[in-house]
Image 1 (cartoon, protein in one colour):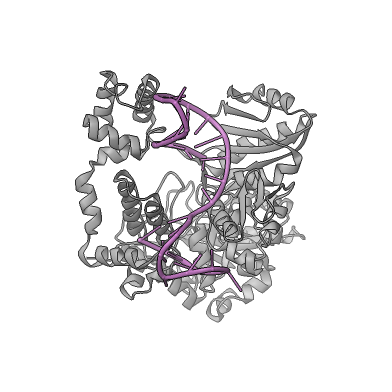
Image 2 (cartoon, rainbow, N blue to C red):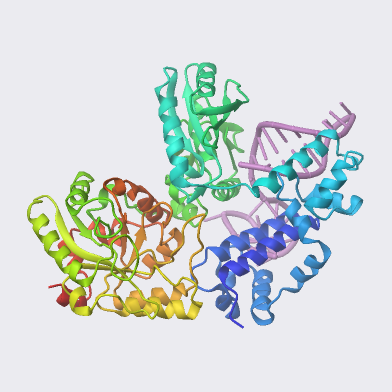
Length: 583
DNA sequence: GCCGTTTTCGGCCCGACTGTTTTCAGTCG
């Protein structure tokens, strides 16, 4: 029996948290399981092995009890307490708590007093009017539950929005709000400001000389399908594109507190407040209350909020309770990479494969984006991406790239390929041809459903190929569309570190692959990372912000990103075997 | 259940909103 993966252990802890909550356990115990789930999910390395060695307690939030449960899950395949609770509470009861407005307390009462144990029996009880007869429930509650079940049955659990879609909506609204004559300041907040992979809704914080006028103006924007709560300090809207947006209009002197509060994350804020309480300070969106003086300090900027707590300013991308508070206290936060640090892009496509622009046009776009170099890496021969690039065609493509390169004084064009990693780990161009290229990205595009062991061996073989400079979009996941394929990330890291093979952070907002956790681990293992746009059209370099965001959320500095260097320096940094071939 | 520049016991973030209540529990972010 294979060890449980980190995500399997985390899922078990989350389920334990949900079930203990239904069981009426102390909320602190429930929170402890959820914190444990987060710690395991975000841990680098296999937590099952760590627990077997008695070292899982080194993870923040994992104590002796949770470690014991990890060991039980590893050795017996189950956790006794979890099995016991599963027998006590039907799975439909847990599903019921996913309904907005119905939490564990009231769900449990519906189960105990009416025998409700599923969405179906909940509907029956509500339709029969039995719920409104219960103490603490009324007609409104009964009606709300019926509507919640109907909405849930139709649409399922609330969908999260991929960042680029949310940002497009948010930045358009932000521009409108900033353009309003009474607006002084306005910023996006929430997970969109942290550049998270997906978001639930949008938050905007503004200050205005006439809050009421701004709120009215927001409610009347052409993008707005519906507006509610049109008070003077807040307006909630739903756009025609289906995105919910909360706009808060606050006093200028409080802007920093509210922006910090609404930017989150929830975990960051909870840890921040916990830390503040230990110093006799209480942080909320209204200010920082000092116990010793009774004074509430209001902050116009976020910098002041963090300074009051004795810590350095924390960039929004880092606010996930992944060690940033400790680093901010000790002055060891990283100097995060920015888009301006990138000097080139090493992964793009032209009409030779599935791109929509010529080499010339892509070169012009890269120059306009401020790059010094660009590798043309069309897909290799074995896949049906538009026109396959046969070996002969690649030879002609190399000549064309050289010709065009000569006419671009400001840009170095590099010959390359995004070559397929075949199921056995070999590449689909002959070695002599690959040796003529400046740069080779190897990617998996087929046979995603191999076993974990086979997929790991396949990728490791590609990494060990001295003609491969970089592995493209390592996990193959597409955010909110496709799970990553199964492979052993630790084994891949070991191989990449050993061979000097680089790993890509693909900036396509639907990919962002490596993800931020893998990117952080890879950099910690000393593996150079490359932020690539994987551009398929002349506008394709605009997605660089998502790759940079992932790198920043991975705590990465410019020195950990290979393409912050000039091309020659990057090329020379490659292992000797590879350099000889390229030369 | 975890954790420790007040603690190995006694704490554990902060506030808004809602509906059902006459002061609050539950839920949410």
